[in-house]
Length: 371
Image 1 (cartoon, rainbow, N blue to C red):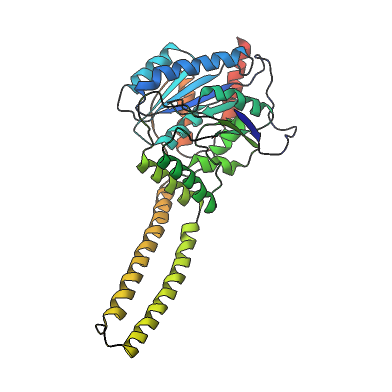
Image 2: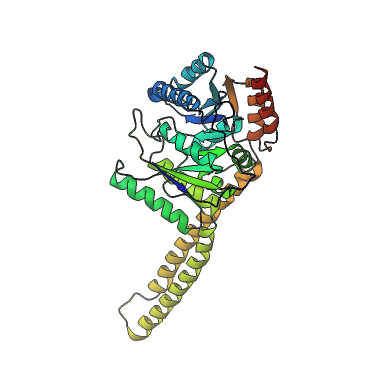
């Protein structure tokens, strides 16, 4: 594992964690889940062991928790999560009312946390929990966002590696600020999470939104594990959908490309007109009127349809945003301070600011001192 600092040195106002367990920051691990019954038992055991180890070593406080978010699973994922939350005080399980997608499920988990640090990780644990300790070390040096970055893709197929790396390069060329080879495995400070929750858009692309925060950040390089069981929740279709969402949410380059395309098509049309005139004047081998009509009509028609499609995509995003519908609805919350967590999550789902976080943290600390 490699730790890379990507921002200037910390100031006196930035967070520095204590090395003792009593004064150590609390940690929340947020795990979106969709049909994860095959890996859930191993995932829970390893994450709980990770919390215990980090607490014993004095890296985190004893009120640290794991937040599982069931994104409308169709298998036994939710019954398992519900029972786990009832049996273990360190687990909070949330169930969305229906499948809302990975980004919304992750956002729902972030919205319910009150801890000092928040790590987001996928349920298959291919992004190994052993990398959380270096992330906390980077946080202790004053970084408010720590990105988990893959340092190799040897386990991927040639097609997967080519499309993934090509995706990051295309996004960067379009002006979208992304961390190369980073997905959604990251640590965020409390301030960074609360700032992220103030972003009101419905079309979530968290990889780009976190970069927009602008807080001091660092990267931790790691090798990804093989998947233990089950199948990837991001097949090619969903990967393409996420990529297009990222482009349309953070770049107007496609709209500018339409203007360029219009200029190019105009130039090509002028060239066709010149060609038709030359053929008409110096040759009798063509069908009269065919080229001068069909070629420009087909060319300009295809360009217009392409432009309308791109403009329509952006109009569709505007339509979804102006409706201001909640990003998710909670069906059930088990574990933790259920009433407060559910009320807070519903307020944030509807787009309200997260100003009540400080009060909840003060209440948590007061309870710890009283004990």
